[in-house]
Length: 269
Length: 269
Image (tube, rainbow over all chains, first blue to last red):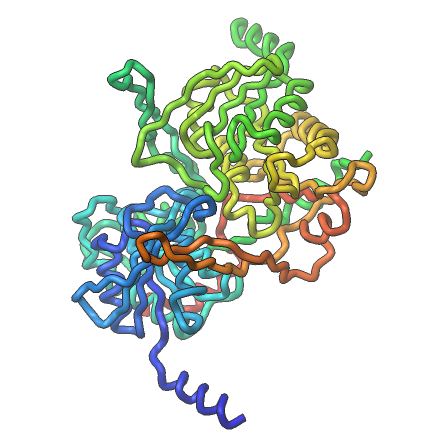
């Protein structure tokens, strides 16, 4: 097997290939920070939305066309592609059309705003990581608890690097991706990294009802986040207590513990 | 507690309140079938998207306005509202703005097309059910394995009624909703209902690359579904073997079984 030996020796000496994406759009300060950290760990290819996609959940583009074009940003050695689709589209397109081999790692973010607890469900950032996970690529979503464009990502850098480096070394089990959230405080006040579970929480929406100039009612969706979980092992607890939270999440959504009970319902009688 | 006694007596005599939504749009034959079945079980309020929202995942509308207006469809006693948002938006708006009390059940569908296995991740139908589940409302998503507009929902009716009736009676545990898929075969060939787990499967995308009239490349997303799971306890197995599949799904995405292992990574060293 001379030829494949040569190939594998080439791969051994190659730096890891890292796919970077996000949901705030390719120009967001959060992804620029993430790219700069990843450039210290491997060969970076960026495939990210051309515009903000927050709150897109795991949307994919089925009913319209997708554009992707290489863009040139003079801030590092990475290759970059701007895509008209959702974060999940970006990952699919990267894997099937843009990259010439399977990446060793996919990182998404750094999101401007929290993706802790129930926010993971609505998160475009996390949907990109999950999409990579489905493809068997170790994947991490990173978020900072500051939704402003001018958010300060300085404190995030070393934590992002530590976690990404570890995942590159250890890999992740099939079916699991990491959801990392960083509190919005100075680096010297962050106590460390805490492995956590997703807190039970929800949003109590307050629809802001208005009238348009034609007199028709319309709404703005807004709401208040409510943590319903008193546990000290949750991501919300970690963040409130100045830790970076790391939650392993899975995309087998089966509630395995309820299957036995459901079978007692005798739905076929 | 005289007053609350009266209230609870009124509620006891009241029919259950059922919220109906979908992701194919309020005019889709699938939701019209679902409404007709629910009218036999309770008081029905429909809040559904004004246009198809397939593949929207758990998207919510953060950056634009939402419209919702009552529409009058002369096919039953239900009240109906057409909404400009996503399926998750519809449920939020229904709960906070349209309904005067918490519904006893939320049903979503009947989707034109499968939401079995990994499709649950991309599904607008299921995102509506999950959204209701987060609010503590027993919720079910129904799908038929026929994506065409002219799909035949006849065989689905009795299974939809059986399962919805049972959930109205038994409720569902906190944090769990049901994902029901119906095979696209004649009713007499359906062997029954099978409680299942989500099969491990994915989509192998084939991007159809074309040039637009201006010479710019664009893509259509399409792909082939691949079931990677040999188990006979999965939803894919049930459907292939002519059963209706019922998968209990959860929105605590924590991979609890990996937390111990992650703690051995010593990320703080």
